[in-house]
Amino acid sequence: MLARKVLGIFPAGLGYRYASTVNLKEKSVGVIGLGMVGNALVKNLQRTGYNVTTILDVDPAKYKDFSCGTAQTPLEVAKAVDVIFTALPMPQHVKAVFEGDDGLLAGLAEGKVWIDHSTTDYEQTEDMNEEVIKQGAKMLEAPVTGGLEALKKGQMTVFMAGEKPIADEMMPMMEDIYANVIYTGKMGTALIPKVLSNMLTCVQNLAMGEVFMVGKRAGVDMRTMFDCIRASSGNSFVWETGGPMLMQGTYDPSFSIALQCKDNRLGYQIATKHRVPIEILGHAMQAYNRTMYAYGDDAPCYSSPRMLEEA
Image 1 (cartoon, rainbow, N blue to C red):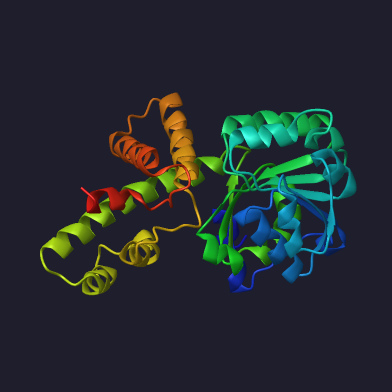
Image 2 (cartoon, helix red, strand yellow; image 1 turned 90 degrees about the horizontal axis):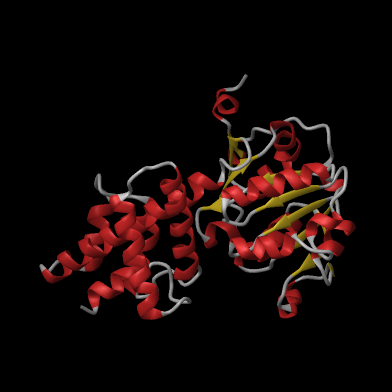
């Protein structure tokens, strides 16, 4: 067994192709949710030769970017295709798409696979998976991480959880549209590192804002400060990607602070359930809440340092 396979890590860029007996490019694919993730997902699927036949969003204006067919309900999507992707913002949106006479579940049947890219409540996902199995269908949870620009280029990482044979079957498709695929284990285990990773990003962003402010008031040029930290042990993914946004005052408009605060709440719920005190992550969660209350739900996700600048 290859070392990468032991770890459950499948870096597509290294030329490794997972063996699958299914030709996924002959399957029809549908996507529900055409926000930033869903929009990029459809384009990456089409760019790599997959047959996206049906899409659905609450805003029909988002269809203009695509020539494939559209549906009126999640039920129609599920009935029309072999593989269904969902990319939705909140747990309640996933639930609304899943349930009801016109919902996704009602259209699932044997042989169909549902892959959920939503960052949502992992316990809700576990419950939904049980219902999917009763229908004879299959499900994978697959939250993505790495930033919008990486997603547009097919350079994101995806955490994938669910039954291993299903993950193995879908691996060639996931390797084609993502740079790294990490299989985390049973259903529910992919969403946990995703939301905790996002919480950790908040801690790093708050610290980054403080470092920039101290350096600025002490007379250090901001670009020089950025270059120095980038070349030192203090460097991080957040510093490299978020630092320029802070200097430019854009604060990453591709991801709203409301969505980040949602992820923080999900992480807090996990920590509470497992009786782990999270003093540092908890502080970051409250700092982000204050920022959202001050600047609104649509404020960019890296906006918290702005409050320090305006103090």
